[in-house]
Amino acid sequence: MLNNLRLIFSIVCIVLQVIPLIIAYTGWKKDCKTIGKERLAVSLSERIWAGLICFPFWLGPIIAYCS
Image (cartoon, rainbow, N blue to C red; front, side):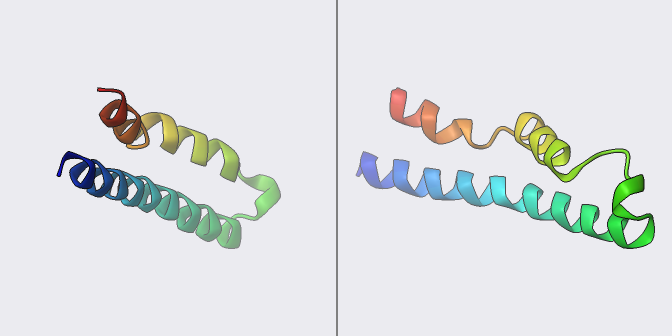
């Protein structure tokens, strides 16, 4: 039962991590169309790293499996 809860928790954490990444990508894509890729102040990789650091849902499964 505990393993099933950990699996469900892991899936939820992965989904919660993917949502901000999709939002960052769509915002970057919109900015590329309006401003131009070479004029952007922040690259896509910087936006993705900021999303991973500011929204660390990926840590949830690691903490759940270690405890």
